[in-house]
Amino acid sequence: MSSKKNILFIQTQAPYGDQQAQEGLDMILGASAFYDDVAIIFVSDGIWQLCQSQAPNTKYRKELAKIYQSLEFYDIDKIYVDANSLTARDVKPEELLLTPKVIEQEKFNSLIEQYSQVLTL
Image (cartoon, rainbow, N blue to C red; front, side, top):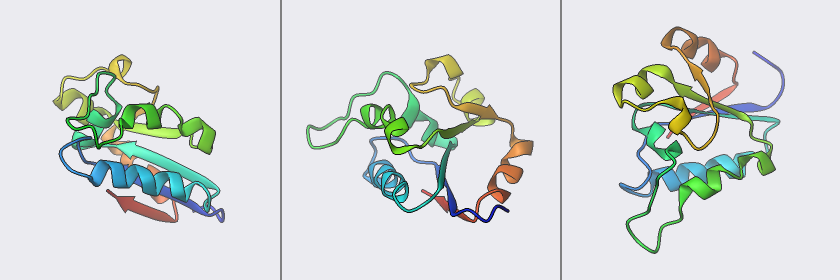
């Protein structure tokens, strides 16, 4: 484990069913001010947050896709997506907003071990 202050966020929620995805994204952006290294992995229904065609179902919700496209301004460039989650939902990496690194299940645990803090959202 590195001595740098680092944190990994595991995004598991679909983007617009409730406020969890938005609140998770707010936490990620806030963490970028306090941590040297912020990473995100999208698993399960969390991969839907990265899909290109998004439309919030209410005018009071932010469009997460636009915010995710600004992650580079927060120095967040370690973005991963679980290969099994993509396959299970018939989503191809090229259909995603960003270009996350696709990781296989066997590398998931080693990724987690690289971070001093891990939050599942």
